[in-house]
Length: 186
Image 1 (spheres, rainbow, N blue to C red):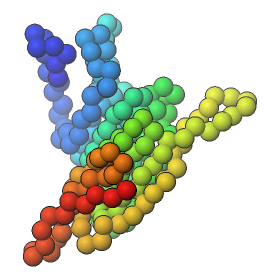
Image 2: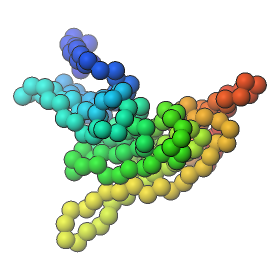
Image 3: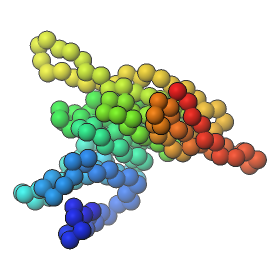
């Protein structure tokens, strides 16, 4: 990772890393990223004026296959579901379960905006909206409400992204005679 073309840092890990996400505010003064992998916790690595720091945000639930960071929210997927961590409150705000635990396909994650997470897993799509719970006697807390869920029957989702008001889904069939599917939907 490098904060400029003149300087570079090497981060060596003794584990198999499957996913990495940079802090959206990564710069020369604040260098943060998260990583995860096979048998690894989700770890926040930061480098600042006072040296390097590693903080385990979550662990003990298997390999971490996908990580997406937008604003102050970090979403990641492991073998049992998707979680979201709020960097401002420094707490995990949700768990979105895997729709079918017998499959183990990798998850495709994408932030559509600062409050909407798109999840493609096996042949399911879930769209979660980050909401704020109002509280009169304490700090406001965040949670996620699933606002849409649909299937892509017969296809396994490999990638997903917003495209205007639509979704673009890259999916493939396990059948030998089928082609790859590129599906757009509202």
